[in-house]
Image (tube, rainbow, N blue to C red; front, side, top):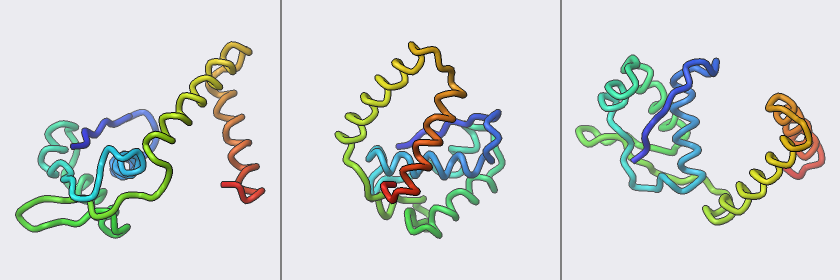
Length: 130
């Protein structure tokens, strides 16, 4: 089962952080069709947030067709998100970790890395690679 974690300083709304974390877990294969999400009550108790925030996140995921609410049972994953396999994610993450270490060794800081990554990602999208 997924455990949510909030970054209250990120500037991203709480409900969107929940949505993003579910989608990320689906991409990585840590959540699969049939898995149950924590109940709204469990999320509220663990994160000290408003129940409506959790319900809003779950409704958005349901509108996207990723989860379904089953009355009296909870919210369950309906579909995964197509993409690279977990093995591919692991391989790519290792490569990215090496790239980040090399960038830090070259004197770049976190903001430099974000800017560089953003530019490369945008260029790839323009070229139709992404």
